[in-house]
Amino acid sequence: MEETWHEVLDVPDDLEVGQLVRTKIGPRRLCIGRSVNGFFAVDDDCPHAAGSLSEGLLDGVELICPVHAWVFNVESGECPDEPGCQLSVYEIAHREGRLAVRLPVTPASRDGAAPRPRPT
Ligand code: FES
Image (cartoon, rainbow, N blue to C red):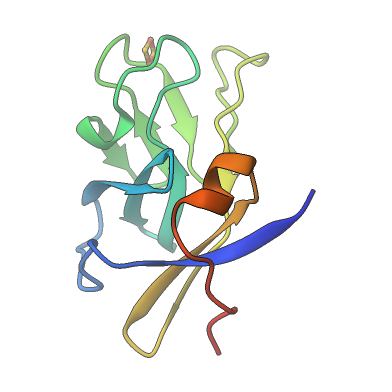
């Protein structure tokens, strides 16, 4: 699958550990946060019933959905209590004060946000 980097413009790069922010890149809503291991980017819509994960709680690397309290690992996307339920996790880079997320290219994203080269 083709992927490309998108600069994240509306999320401060000084997020504190445990903070979550919702952003949108093209048609895709993302939850971006900072865990004990650094920045992460996942789909904002919970794979169970589309709760907004950016309104949830982050504990270590576990993101707790605000709707039914399912727990997702923000590094693997796994949901230990519901093994068939997988959260999409995206590669994120933070360099020189900029955040960028690597997302799959879709027909809608071709018309939306302009892709950027990989940050160096
Ligand atoms: S909507 Fe997230 S656990 Fe149900």
